[in-house]
Image (tube, rainbow, N blue to C red; front, side, top):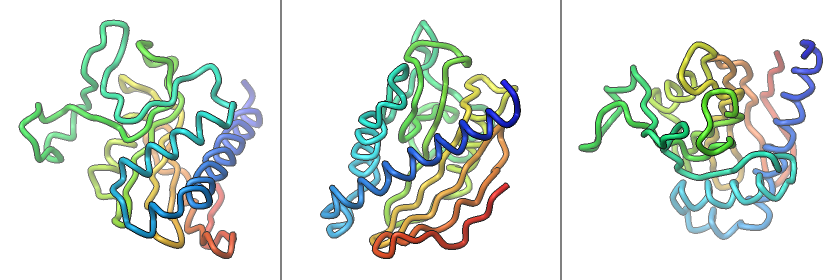
Length: 183
């Protein structure tokens, strides 16, 4: 695929994600009024991503923690310092993935880390970087970090382990983007 075609695919992907996020705000505004946890918001976002029909060849799953044909637990070396549970320290459970279930690295499209009414921390960013590296085990094409607030959201894109775009802040009531940088 030519570089221009990849850029178009990336732009198309980001447009679908942006539209799906806005559907969460318009159709599920009560979630923001009562400040629900990230799982509820991730679930609604996953539904709208799936309903977009752009990802028909893929599954859109929340908290999918398996990998490969044998269903091994997803592990990401280097995140040991991030765990606060009794699980093995390198286990990961992404908030949303767009992938082909039980496949290897070739069929992973996107991984999302989400925070509601908080900020993505260094560990969330480390997961997105590790899961998108071309030399890593998972090789997701895109990593998206989203911070949901009541009236706006912040988001960024990670490709091949590098934060590629600070997509910035999107104000919901005004429908305008501000602080958007393009690569």
